[in-house]
Length: 342
Image (cartoon, rainbow, N blue to C red; front, side, top):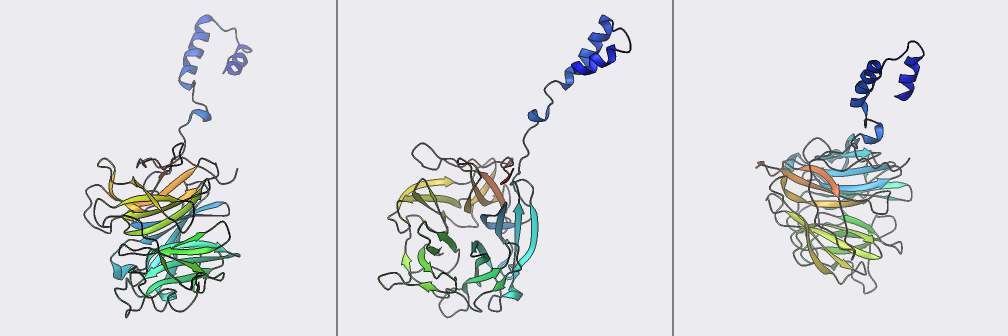
């Protein structure tokens, strides 16, 4: 602004009144530099449409969300995905996997879990909501050359199609441990199992004692397991309550090993009468900064009674000095932009 005033003074002598007028005109612009602009925010819900059970991931320089298409079971016949360079600007990838690509799946395709392995991308999913060991369905695996698909059925049949230790074969999550082992953690009906995956993800590998499935159900568990490592400790998370009700919520435990034992800590995400109800079935994303952690979850808008009206949201995940997760504050603003690359 001083340069503008000096430039004008070359053409005509500036009176005191002229200088005052120019300075007053400049006042509204003070503080309006780009550094003072409010940061771009993701907003919540972060993507349009009815979606649930979001699996968050980072592949290369993009964030990804792989959710359930939230609809009546007989209409849950495909998966969409969403990618973003910064958590704010999202691109939708339609029908990355459909029931037409999985001959044995005919309804209730749920809770995709995405993982990269040796340059290929694998999508684990539940299908058919089986109620007993005689029904066809369970946990399947699909594979693609890129995160956005298209995915194709890997096995031609479910990877897990039976109840073990009482766990319905749904809500699978793939956990990569520090020793290179990959585990499938899954289960509904208030039971959670862990099994070790073969390197090609085509089969399960028995543990040293000869068993293939180990139960690891913590107190309060219902469904939706998730695990991550921070500071050398294992955080095991899950959903409690009924998914159609307002009290759906997320709790967690901590251990020094993927196998436990697990010490339940408590609930960290639940309904807020001012924001939304039914907050649960989440995942966690680590951002580019050491202190950047995000929780991706679904919730039900206030006043909504349709059980399938669920939307995907993102908020910050914070820890205290002891490494315990602080209660999550749900927001409508979401999170600020956090690019994975400069």
